[in-house]
Length: 61
Image: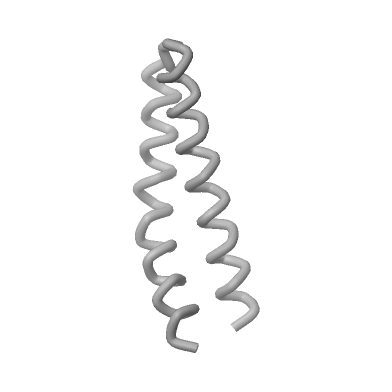
């Protein structure tokens, strides 16, 4: 159970960081490069199923 909580925490932090970067860039009209957009998008796409799976596991207990 401890390992699931660590993975859940890491996925929440990663999601927050990606969201913060994109939101800050839009707020200040900063154009992110295509590479940065794709890296952040890929990180979010990989992160979402992990976050959903670990959230379900954490909520079962």
